[in-house]
Length: 90
Image (cartoon, rainbow, N blue to C red; front, side, top):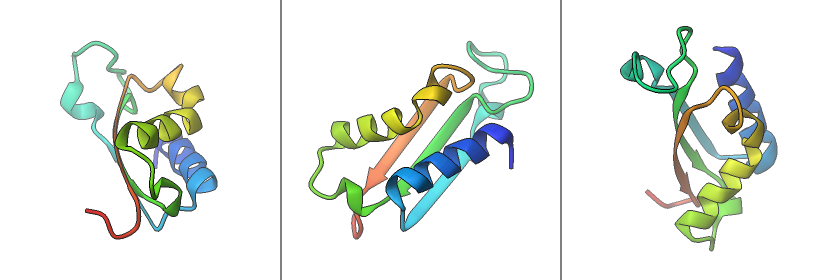
């Protein structure tokens, strides 16, 4: 697990206590594009399921995740795709 992926995992776990958390480093697919870093860990896909998202709109859920990862998004992470779900949603 890379340093940035680990930081994302730890921060999302602390902020939301998710029942499901999947983080994919998608950087290799963006090699040579803007924001891609030689060592990877610049583009991520996150699927997170947590009670904290129940009743919140899709945009609000994404903002919650972005807020938890503000430091990473201001630095090494160029792109983040978020699928935030409440328990029982697909």
